[in-house]
Image 1 (cartoon, rainbow over the protein chains, first blue to last red):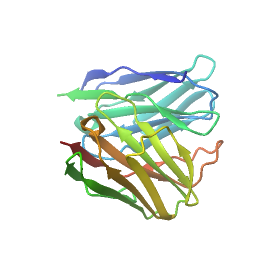
Image 2: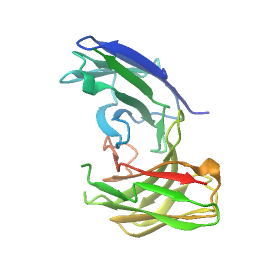
Image 3: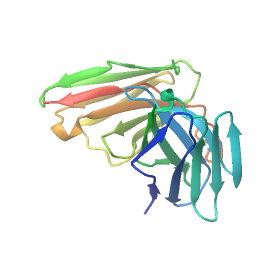
Length: 109
Length: 116
């Protein structure tokens, strides 16, 4: 079967750093995506990893290890507006995007 | 504004009603998708259209019927739904369906459907 696992909920403090993990088992691998979804809004693209290593984009970074079937999204200098659901998705060998259930992040003052 | 517009944003319908969800993309993409998002569950892919041809149907019940009249518009026709069909229905589009492409898909804000 195909499976994407990520924590259901996380809480962090404004100004801190938080790491959201994602592990996957899919039929083939053609890249991993992270999306951010605020309540009542569309999911929006954050990052794409297809090679091992760290991709940095401002306060957000995403890491991939294909041999371990593992990725994380790192959010630095947390702001209240970062409170949202973070979706991990893997493109499998057929080109289909398989989504995890999302991690609900709450940022507290 | 993501370039993908969905209407209506909220819909309440009875189990015997017929209604339709509409999606329009302004990004010049040639692939469009319907996803279902239920609480605490992963996004479920329902249908995929590429160049106006349906290329994927993930065992979706026939009470959901998609239509893609052109590359910019996508509909989801709803008929005799069940209460468990209540969910957020998301439309999305992408430049292509290249398996090896890192092109992301762009989502609309969704249509909240409640079946009573």
